[in-house]
Length: 477
Image (cartoon, rainbow, N blue to C red; front, side, top):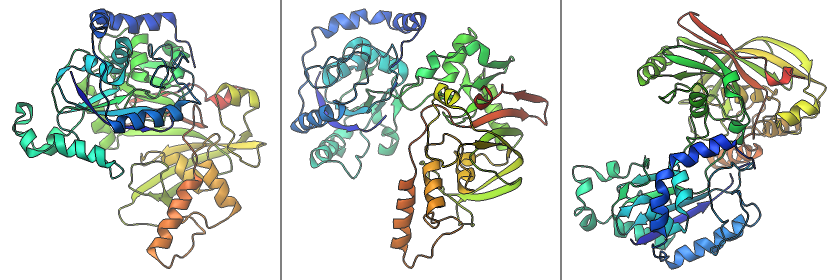
């Protein structure tokens, strides 16, 4: 089985943590049938890499020197860490490794990835189990940053003369055939010309293994489960990790045979009420209630400064990337953001012990004597809405390492925010774009675990179903 190495990308991205033995065994048993693949792998020839692939490997080795993300730190011949299994879970997210490949000779996907990327079968099987491997029948177009060699490969495998001979894409447009889907079975067959994307270092969530999940269950019915989501976890998983999620661990805690379905999201760094559907039918029903605005969410936010009560209105830029930019003034095509601050009271700033326990980050706020607990009725449900709006009001949320640095910068030098109260007048569009890029750069990274934000109550059907979370982490002093 041959291969063409298409490209490789590295960035930031894991924590070191020992998972419970029972959970490690669970994952091992899931792949017990892979012993046969392991034996076959001994006879697989080493894959041949192109020159661009060798350059890629050299660059990647340099990037990974400082932070080995896997449980063992022994270097392999290609400079990457020695891979074994995805569990135990590492305690820190290091640089991701994402491989983009085009198959040149068909065969089982596990064997292909093992040979091409020089990875052991059990590790690749874990990646597939985590949902970290994707395929498309036809290779998607590379980004503008692609090298000439990568463009050459793309043009070669997507040439009309090549595609017309592939029975698997007959009746499909090229765009339809370029849609990506998860690989779910280790023995799934991939034909020549298939595109594969392998997230070798998926984002990890070690908090999942620290939680008593049964104690976080608020309610169970025949249709849904209400969970008090812990901070530092993802509701339904990420692009490269659907295993370490609230839905998966709540399913196991309740001993359910059918996986729970995600009905809505809250940020990883936010804790509180989340509704998980027990059936796909109720998942659709709940989505309908959200669309019809029949679901009410109340939040508790621990702000760094007092916030006036009443309705706060902003407009959010309709670009699905963090940080979310918002404006006090109406801008055409920007999304309306509204929340109602029902009450705001002064409380002690969380002490150092509590902040350390919940990995709350010090984001440089100048005064830490008092914080302000705000009860908020969320009127519109935009991503990062509460965080972005409070930061725009000069009262960022405690521990919010993404929005607080920008709020501090605006406080020290009013006018940096091109959409804020003290925004400047820009004579050219280029000046405005430069100011926007500079404002984005003032923001920090996404918080690692907790910020002062809790979805404290959720209700629907005019209060027929109403559920509340436990006391927020900052009250546990």
